[in-house]
Length: 141
Image (tube, rainbow, N blue to C red):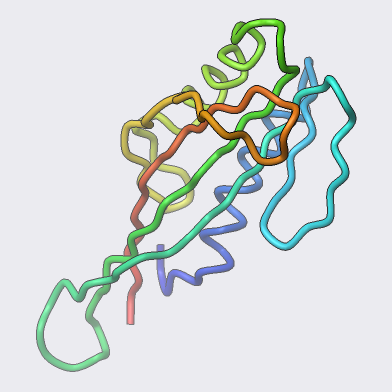
């Protein structure tokens, strides 16, 4: 990926998820800084993309050199409370398959962690699990 841009990386991650969860059965997705009012007793996914520490991959001038951009995608999966984890884990499997050790538009995804059940869901009234996926991309300077 030439000149990796943080918004391009974010759009790659979010676009992949939005496309997958728009297919049957469709599941609403909410991203950072986006208003959302969940429908009671329904499922939805919250996608949070964050960028962490970057590192340079070569010494010398800032032209013709590269940086590694590292980040984390946190996917919170919400489903109806009191009916078991089945629906939630089905969504989690779809998400795991979507990012599991693939390269998409220059974004390298690691093996996912989860879905792990969270004891205190936010918002309350849902069963919540979380899938986390680290990723990296190379920035050309």
